[in-house]
Structures are given as structure tokens and as C-alpha cells.
Image (tube, one colour):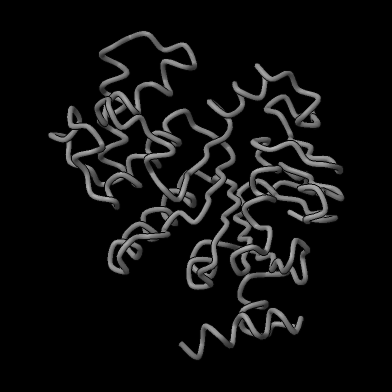
Length: 258
């Protein structure tokens, strides 16, 4: 991993009136690192993800991102157009519900190709060839390229969403419950695919999940959240095998008892 962080979050807080979304969260994310954010529903993990990915403006605190030039920039000091370009190029966002990250009324190939067109590619043959390549990489048959996502299973839609996000060669991927709502066998296949792609492409990722098995399989480091605050952080295997915070111990033991 690089000596310099890719993302640096300091004292990040988000309040909804008197209600805490997340409070005083600080962490660094390093190139090639996968960080899992875990906790029960309502713990603040999705609010934190949305603030870090600039989908939601925080109440206080800062998020700095290392641009390809090497310069660290505070996200909300980048213009809105600049942030949109980051989201099309350097970043990806994988939603729990694939319909939130896909255009359901256009073909699978067009869903992947649109990201390329958004960064200036106008050569139809090259776009289609790249889309075909990425469909293959996420285990979607080439003869499905002209089918719309509405004709796909949930697992196929999620794999298509992953291809759409990765086609522009991003450095950072945000994932919000990427296996949520899928059958166990489909989850296992998707996780194996994700783990391989993240490793092969050297991606950094922040993964929000309530599933500790997903965190163990995908992440190098884990942050445990409760009521908007981080209660424990550390290497994934260390936290899951020997949790120190009482809440982390409860979270791990509740999974083991299922």
C-alpha cells in the first residue's frame, strides 16, 4: 500500500435536527485497502457512507480525497461539476438495490457503455467491445448484451451494476449492502466475484454491511458503529475474533448464536 492515504476523514458529523446520523468520525483509507463499516440498522453506517461519498453534505468535519495528480482536495471545495466527474471516473457506487444504480429501460450494454460516453468515448464499436468484455468479467453471457436489466435476476442485476461502475477504471468504490436481499448461494458467488475484482484491479473500497461474514470476506479493516459513533476499529480478523468493545462483543456473539 502507498505511504499516503487516498481518503482522509476528520471529525465528520451529520445531524438531522436533534437526531444524530453520525458523529465525530475520523479515519484514513489507503490505496488498495477495503474498509468495512458494520453495525445494526440505525447505527449511522449508511449516513456516514453518503457523507464520505459526497452524496450528502455533512454538518461538520472534512473529507479529503487524493486526486490522480497527488493533490489532496476537500470534497466540498471541489465544484459540483468536478464532483460529478469524480463520480463518473475515479469513483463507483454500488447500491443495495441494483435498480437504484442502473437504467432499467435500456440494454445491459448501454448501461455499461453510458459510463464510457460520460467520459467522452464516442466510438460505438469500441464502447460495445468494452461492454462485452466487462459483461464477461462479471459472468454475464455475451448474448444478454441487448437485454434490459428488468429481464435479469437480482444477482445478475447486481453484477451488471458492478460492471457499470468499474468500466471507467475507478480507484475507489463505495458499496452499500452489496449482497443485501440476495439468496445465500447468489451472495456467495457475488462476494467471490467482488473479492477477485477488488484484488485484481487494486481498488480501494468502503463497504457498508450488517453481515459480518461479508465484512470478513471482503475487508482488510473494520469499523464498528453504534448510534452514530465508531466504537471500535481494527484489522478485520482481530476485531471479529477478539472484539474489545462491549457492543462489538455483543454483535459478534449474536451472529455466532444464530
